[in-house]
Length: 178
Image (cartoon, rainbow, N blue to C red; front, top):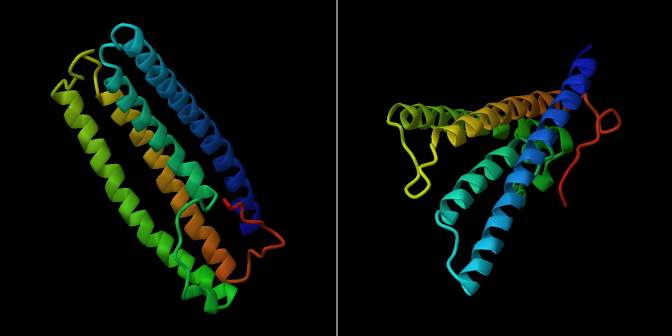
């Protein structure tokens, strides 16, 4: 029963995180296009007005949208020089505790981002040159951060299952970077 829930949830989160990462990839490609265009026009005539504002907003979206996918695939930096000595189940228990602490930090970041977005909306905060409202970026970032928080909680659940011996490497292969 738990394995069915875990497996179905992982597939569901995988799809959502992947599509969100695709959206971030599009935002990153747009940023690169803006930078290349601005540099090219700067050499020939004058750069695009507000190019830095556009790049700032797009890169902000990119960073937020990559967080859930990276966490689901263990794409975080891990210093494990002392944890290598522990057996796998102890490492899984340590991973559960670490991710639970990480969930608290991510929850704080999520709440603060939502608060900043509400403040940005209520104060009608816009970019300097192009007068683009800033609150939509906060909104997109908040959605991505809520998904990131769900992913972190899910990884805590998986780590607990592994530490208890319910989820084994044969029933679940961890997708890892590098």
